[in-house]
Length: 385
Ligand code: SF4
Ligand code: SF4
Image 1 (cartoon, rainbow, N blue to C red):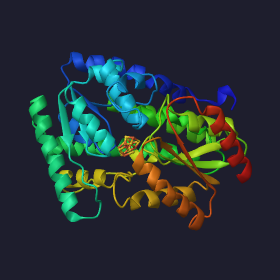
Image 2 (image 1 turned 45 degrees about the vertical axis):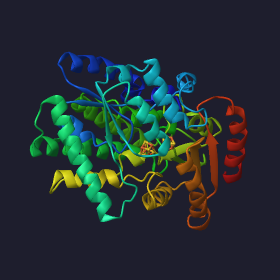
Image 3 (image 1 turned 120 degrees about the vertical axis):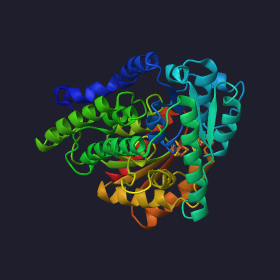
Image 4 (image 1 turned 45 degrees about the horizontal axis):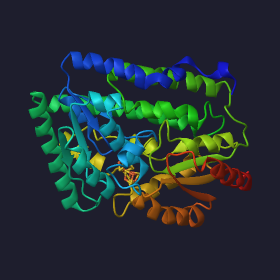
């Protein structure tokens, strides 16, 4: 892509985290509580309705892992070790700024790590059920969401009204709709940007302090990218293999597979994982009991910690068709048992339902296997070109 083609509104997101830190300082000065959350299941609307600011503490970098391994086993998913490592080394400014932490009982590694983490900072645990279809699971989760509301009210001293919550539901839905509109600009040729360009945009939703400014920035970006697309500009040749990336969350510092796919001539038109579409695809119903609607929406998040996890299969199938992909790459983190086991079934679906080439990559945050992965990815892309 020629550099001039990248709009300012896109470059703006490259240092979004740094900008957010400044805004976070101001929020703290105004005595707003900062709440660190670890997962897509955290109902952010409640945190904000209580007048607090949510930030994501999901570790995406290799650096703090060695310190984490002094306490946690080395054969644990790098995302858990990185998140924990940032906490024990106090090297993540978002962790340092957090007054309280919120976690959920998702995978085993994470929930056991939380047992240690809660010794470091005030911690609130949401008990997430593993069924998305059992009415008793929804009832339990709704109760958990309500208890979190009571907890947040106690922490902030602010009573959360139905109106406050409804307002936040509308704002978050607006944000999700914009992220979806931006993501869907990649659904057909020409693609105005590459997957690597969209990574900081999708990641930015984890560090929003000033929601109004954020929504405006997304609107600017959508407008600029839509114009670029309409002008016929394409960030890659028309015959570049269009890849759907699914699996574990990635981010700045752990984006090697995404980067390699695009360095090898492919284009990631769609990220189904928690960094991408999975986190903003579902909207909260805007009519009716907001607590029920929140519980329903968040419980439907299609993560492999659910059993069964039909939602992920439905989403991957829908996205593969809508984004007209030429292949699916499932990227899992080493020792993430749930995504690793599920990979076999995703492969089955790719082969038997979608008739699409599939590759499973199991890796970690280090660069040790980069060249080996490059060779595998090159061969995969060559096969499907
Ligand atoms: S993959 Fe699952 S456990 Fe991990 S952040 Fe997403 S929803 Fe949470
Ligand atoms: S990537 Fe897998 S093991 Fe790691 S935190 Fe997410 S669900 Fe758990």
